[in-house]
Image (cartoon, rainbow, N blue to C red):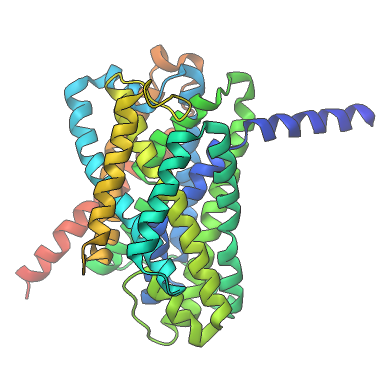
Amino acid sequence: MKKKSSVFWTRLLIFLAVMGPGIITGSVDNDAGGITTYSVAGALYGYKLLWTLVPAFIILVVVQEMNARMGIVTGKGLADLIRESFGVKITFLIFLGLVIADIGNTATEFAGVAGSMMVFGVSKYLSVPIAAVAVWILVVKGNYKVAERIFMLFSFCLLSYVISAILAKPDWGLVTKGFLEPQMHFNKEYLGIVLGIIGTTVAPWMQFYMQSSVIEKGIKIGQYKYSVWDVIVGCIATVVVAFFIIVACAATLHKNGIVINEAKDAALALKPFAGAFASQVFAFGLFVASIFSATILPLATAFYVCEAFGFEAGINKRLEEAPQFYALFTSIMVIAIIIILIPNAPLIAITIWTQIINAMLLPVVLISMLIMVNNRNIMGEHVNKKFQNIVGWSTTVILITLTAMLVITPVISRFFK
């Protein structure tokens, strides 16, 4: 009995030591862009899109596990592996699209900071610069261990959306129906939201961050199974938070025909239907998610660009050791902040289309990953199993099909008018 207890505590301690990359990467899925996308989905379609979270969860677990495994086995970041496998020219073209999307993503995070603080009466011209300075200091002056602890705390705070959803008093029968009975409509708006949900749940930039953080944490192959559990826990947290955001907005906004343009609108609109506390909790979750992702997103972008082109990268590096890394991180933040502080900037258009662009770019990243993770010269005996390949290639084909339909549907509609 004592031996079994000792084994349990040993395994728990190993898991706690390894824990971090999967949970943080999963939680950062629910950023301002994600919260906006889930809120719009709930407000427009009620509970009808809850079913999308089931395939999104499966895809997320499989993709994140592949990232963790590649990082542990090779000791190299995803960007580094793409450059070595496909050459500098292809890497440059892939990353050009990703960097543009990530600037839009980062702008969306600061839009979330601005919107959430407006609910509490704080101007964006005050909240955004203060948040940006705090994020910059954390990354440039901190180290990986300190940052990871703060990120884990942020991950926990995102569970505040569970409270908002319960206070909204949803119809759990309709919730179950929406979760278990898939519906598909082939119009531009519906396809756009479905793509947006997948794009924000399995964003391309996350794959680079996940692999880089596994390497930076120094996880070894003997700890692989604990890393898988870290991934699974993070993916569960992602889908649970997304689920309750959709439920909260479906139970209040959709039920009462309220149209929203951004996550801030959802927080404000909750007040007359679920009470001031529910509204404030929703806004608090948006603020935490936005700060969280405003840190991780430009950090991930700086990581993969520097990895790909051979520059030093990492939070544990000093400013003078990795000047390109910190310069890129700072530049992305500055451009994003300028976009947000422009009066009347089209924030909702930036948010939704950024998530759709994520979904459009994801197949390119997935194809690269699948080719490399099945290459025995790179992975040795740790190549993909059949199930992982089925999920990976099926996801790629479905995303390409949905993207084509999103582009083609409006053209067909005009032709047959």
